[in-house]
Amino acid sequence: MKSLYRLAALGAVLLLSACASLGGGIGGEGGGTQSRLTILISSDGFRADYLGRGDTPALDALAAEGAQGGMRPSFPTLTFPNHYTLITGKRPDRNGIVNNVMEDPAIPGVRFSMSNAAAVQDPRWWSQALPFWVSVEQQGMKAAAMFWPGSEAEIAGVRPSRWMTFNQALPSNDRVDTLLAWLDDPKGPELRFATLYFDVVDTEGHHYGPDSPERRVATVEVDQAVARLVAGLKARGRLETTDIVLVADHGMASVPPSQRWPLDDVVDLSKLKLVSTGAVVGLTPVPGHEVEVEAALLKPLPHLTCWKKGQIPERYHYGRNPRVPAIVCLSETGWYVTTRKMMEKPGKWDLRDGGQHGFDPYDPAMRAMFIARGPSFKPGVKLPDFDNVDVYPLLARVSGIKPEKGDGSLKVIGQALR
Image (tube, rainbow, N blue to C red):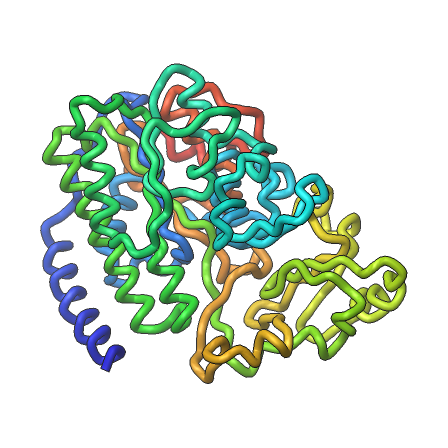
């Protein structure tokens, strides 16, 4: 019944979207080279090729009026590492958020994970790099974070002037309305920079797969939320003085149940400490068992390649941070590593096709959305693929903020600027 409802909803929404798209663009071209406000929007798990399929008239209009391109995520292609890369301009190995799940010898007894609220709010995990909102605040201007990994922690003694604890249950439109209310507040700060985050596309992509009707409905939901933001800015006379930069942290690949397999099949788990599983596996041998574990993993394996942390291929820019475990393994796209114990959990694994990310950042399935529209950007620009570390210097340029030294450049993404 739920699937039938979603299919009906998709048909209705697509019909409305198609009618709306006949009305032309979202707004006229803006002037000038620096906006009063920059809004960075992330739609988690929004693969680059989800655009242009008839589901996203608002996003497609923004792309036509600005710049669009496929963006290569950083390794590992996971949510927290790439969101922190986007907002700091440093790859995960340098920004310290090396995985969604990690440990740090300098923070003993604690395992960082997205569900560990105490760790997420602990500045020690985020202190290896400065997020953009900290630089904005330090330079005498004001920033807001309507959800973003890292925004719940006080980093370098600074928080955004406006922020909220993440609440996945908050609907996409309500997130937009919260940001607009911050802009309207006469007693609030005049914002130079703001973030906005949607997770529904990633959630449905995981549950049902990237090619599912459910994922398409989620994509439509995000498109309508962005249209709501654009309409709100236009009604307030702020659209043409606002740069809107839309990104995703990674793409999504199909993972059928038959391609989920337990690591127990190739190595004795009692001989190692398993930190993370999935498309990217991180583990450290128990002292005295290094030879056994390395012999089992550092050899050709079906659908899995493992390296010692100091021998990870250079193109991944990964393996020097002390938070990276002793051995890192990368799954072939479409394969997912777990354990027998995890597979036996009720409801954890079923016969439904789903989706995952974390795979090779050079795989097209991991390419993330990028759109930039506003007074700082040329219309109709189609960029070649670029690395997501390049977004940070772009934000600094259009916001008039002095950036921290990072890993990105404007060589490719700068083609979008006026």
